[in-house]
Image 1 (cartoon, rainbow, N blue to C red):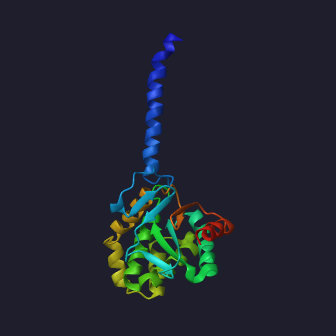
Image 2: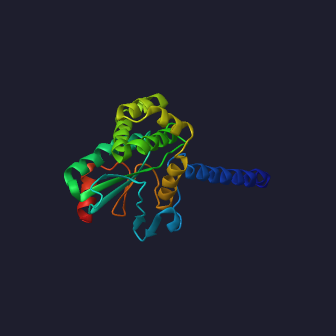
Image 3: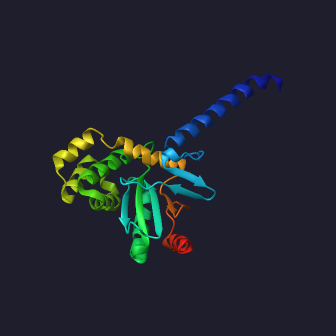
Length: 224
């Protein structure tokens, strides 16, 4: 066995390096996973026990009653198939609970596996710049209803249908005007313990993945 020791130790070191490298890639978005960090209020997310408190600012996108009892915050990726599956589930909750719920969308682009995640997120913000939250959510719906068409031509097509000035929109996209805003959403998600998309919270309680409507409803009812 002695003669094999020279191979065991370097092999173990190599294996450990690969594991660490994989963890770093994962944190960067390769599989939509991130390590939970200590609370940092400057990022807009504070972890308190089993709940996460997020700062909601004037640049956040709210669908529904802004003063609702229930806040559904979703960290999402337009190219994520599970996000596409969860989108109609969240819309169903909006329909059932009406004035009692508001839905806030935050970007969590998994750039390591979804090449259109970042461009589509930035495009949505360029639409919001001109069309406000109503136009933003119209764009969001179009993305999830047409995930097989994601690309710059489709984003411009939807933006034009929404009614924005297309030249202003194109300039916004080319300048990557909202790159930092998308990154800030991502940082908040990581800070709040998001481990994949969709990563959602109902009044601070984590909702992991594309849960069925019955499960989401139970969480909402408990919050109410």
